[in-house]
Amino acid sequence: MFIFGSMNIPSKIVEQAVEEFSSLPSIGKRSALRFVLHLLKQDPEDIEGLSKAIMKLKNDIQYCTKCQNISDSTVCEICSNPNRDHSLICVVEDVRDVMAIENTLQFKGVYHVLGGLISPMDGIGPSDLKIEELVSKVKSSSTSELIFALSATMEGDTTNFYIYKKIEDTSIKTSILSRGVAVGDELAYADELTLGNSILNRTPFEMSFQKK
Image (cartoon, rainbow, N blue to C red; front, side):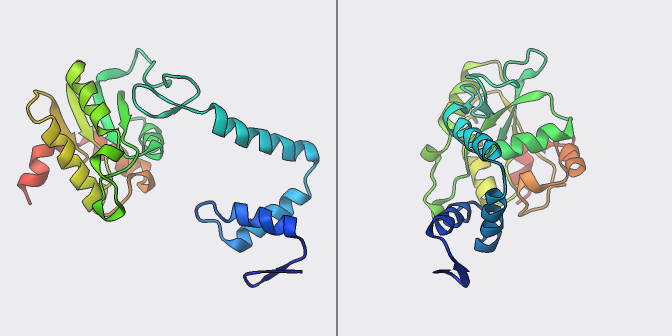
């Protein structure tokens, strides 16, 4: 009998499986144990299918060379779509934000995924993100507008301003989502109607800090 937190687990193998599952975000030890016990009841073919899907996810997923979104090929479906407005770039923190905005059906441009936000407290600086790639892209292409769609947090505002200063000497229009997305909210968790309206009613970025 193995004592695992407040749980008595009669198998070292089960204990190790629970440990792996509980390392996932928002998965506690008890939820992990339920997953493991559920898997024990499944047919070997089902378990093998799950295992193959996880390995394929790790080995075969790619990141779009144009926008850093997840993709099955070197260029994602959004960037390769000729019907999208490639002069309009929406800057987001991670791939969850791309999914959230796409679900609104209100945006017809393309994206650039930074991979995080500038956060000195967490040791994350501009060089840790895909900011230079963004700056190079907008300066070497026919970009007409850059939409800052980062979370309405101090880190999001800091990142917005840093990018703005990097391209300030260009003629590229910069805008920011209207504050229908409440201050402190993460973009990925905003409801589709609010997020869609925030995109449609975006405002010039300069106004966002001139008011402060």
